Image 1: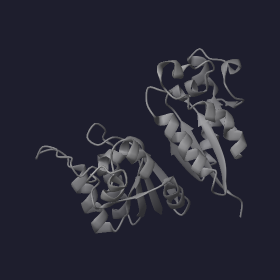
Image 2: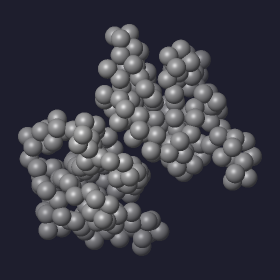
Image 3: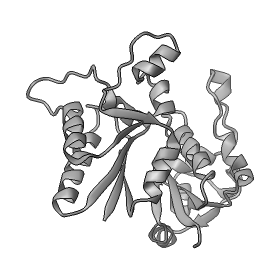
Image 4: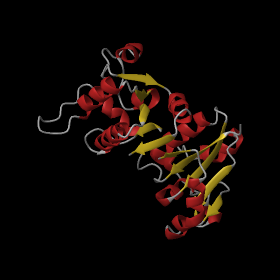
Length: 129
Length: 120
């Protein structure tokens, strides 16, 4: 089965990254696949490359990047939700003349159409708040 | 092939967070696809539809007006969980748009009938 994930919980404050990653690993171990992880609402904060948890804490950013690399799963940040919350690529920040962006290079940026396209081409959409 | 059934579940009250606004953004994008769209208001989400909201007095945008316009975007299946409404002291006459009220069993059936569900 192909799963498409919608992650809407904030970095660190919520357990959404931990739950989504655990779910993904279990799904892949069971022979399923993950088509895309879409970060929406407060979930866009997961892409902030400046996040720096303590050494003994769960590092969502590192885990997302590693997960995406290992399994070739695209990580996509919603452009409007990100801009509303100050999560931008260098290109976006440049467009607003805000200097450098802060989104991690492992995440790409797209609109809500990308969420629907991935959802419609997958068997299930699972939301992690 | 008939259009895929997609349900957007709105479960939080307006203004205390941006969930409703961003659910609406997602629904409006969804209407640009060939989908059979339904919207369900449940739990605190029923407060989104309450009449006489006056957020603009306090400098907030009254985004909930857009729910009334959903019909213009071809969204005709708007559902409300009756128990959530009654538990919060609301009645159908206090809502800003017409909805179909569903009991808990009908909500389960609605969700089970969908190809995709987005929860906000």
